[in-house]
Length: 381
Image 1: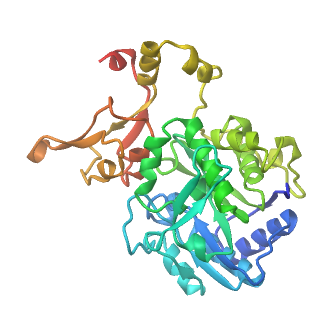
Image 2: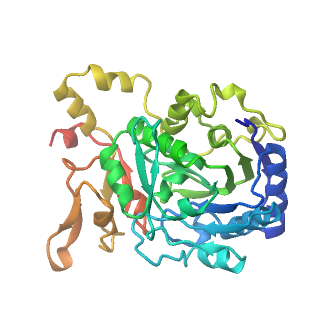
């Protein structure tokens, strides 16, 4: 497998500048063979939001990707994503991604229609995925992630972005089935093995730092990345924002499989090296402390439960909350529900049911849910 990652500077979202940067990054990375193929471009849409919030892949980035893929000879171009709470008929209106696809001659796909079963015989966590029908239509899939932090998985990139191929609210059930970082990462690695993505272009012009992937702060990075090796691209992005790639659950799990890389040192950088463009003050999600994974196995059951109760948890800011109920709808463990009547009605979290997947934090449109450390007295209550 190609182990090259192309990194190019790009100061903003001007279409021509984006196209030149993407083409240069792709030329450096090599391997973009889409001639005569139907291509599915998969942007990152956590929930439909304006581009300036840096939650979604920017529509100008999508537009430049469509132009590049078409010039490479693609026979057809499909675009789509499936945010957690979007039902049938989703068109990505607020993010302008749907209209951008149509305006540039691509076809927008509703991921809630025409599901397809995709086997993964080599999967360790999942042997078969039920995915959007667009996966069956496409000859190759190109991931278009946004460079962002992620409260549960630390970092979200090209490999994690493909989780959006799982239709709509079905995704939240995966968090119940795979509640730990390690088990969820294993599922993501299986998903990438099942769909065999062809390529990735990363929107790192403006990324997100702090409590991502939706409640963080936009951060200008000024880069685009390209590679046919999604693990290599994610590793490069991690280095740019100051994470050791091996500390990221998905990247660590994918590396252990040996299907993309045997060692991060194998990655080739024909252009810019991540260390040349590293952002030393990028605000990151804290990593799990060394040795904590081993303790999960050796601690007695009672102490292990107490330790789990100390894991940072979602807390609702009732001054910001408008009680829209999105958090309750996304929560597959049933840990969030309305409490009280009339003006006293509030959303409440049952922490005995909460699995700390942080989907509620991710989906809240008003940033009314924060992830906070748990005091010992709270864990005991």
